[in-house]
Figure 1 (tube, rainbow, N blue to C red):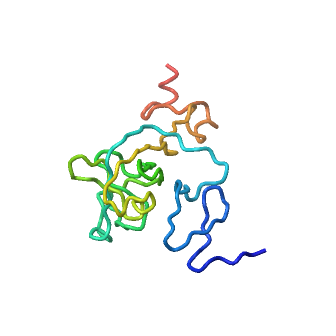
Figure 2: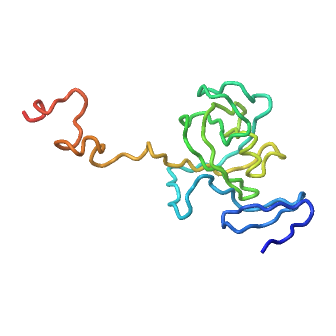
Figure 3: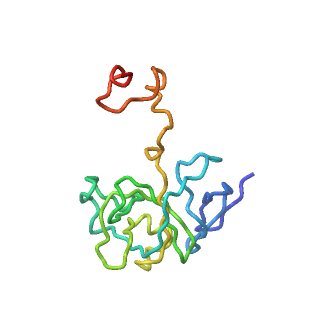
Length: 176
């Protein structure tokens, strides 16, 4: 059974996977869905939390190299931060709209006093901040798979004699 949509409306998917309609001037509320996440997957572990002011950047920097060496694409979900390592994943939640987006740190900045993070234009649009230019946000640094340290060494060493030895130490030297 198909239902006719009103003029200017298009089906939109939300995190609850129900189809809803939004007319041309109507904004959807609620958090942005984590793209690529399997339904029923465990939530990401939050390592640290901050609150501060975010701004966004885009058109003037589009196509230029970022501090990480990537080409900046204002349509990607990326951000600039002064100290977080490159490729760190951060959930940014707007204090005004309550909407959130997960971005990857690939640049340095912002270099304006009092600002904590510079979002790409797409990330700012996702949390409803693009029109204002700046806004108060909560940052949640997410644990990446590389942050997880296996307890008994890697699988490659677990099948051998035991846990991995420190570099430069041989099994004969460890036995003495």
